[in-house]
Length: 107
Image (cartoon, rainbow, N blue to C red; front, top):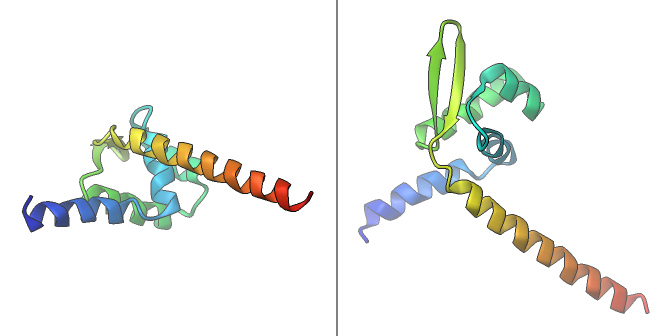
């Protein structure tokens, strides 16, 4: 693959490299959401959430749709949900491993 492809991949990975942006992607996994709902569910300030949405949009992870005064976001890369599930599974295994070590040390 050419270097440009790796650069494009890095842009997407960088866009995902923040907890709020990961949360937004997971929220959008089950369908389009309005900005107000995203702000409410994420629990961050509106301006902060808007910046995160802009990063995801500029990387091509999501797209925005205006309907009157409302803006709705949709996930363009639903395959990311599989990647997040893989990471979730790895985290569970890591926690089990550390739990087993802690048990052995406390004996």
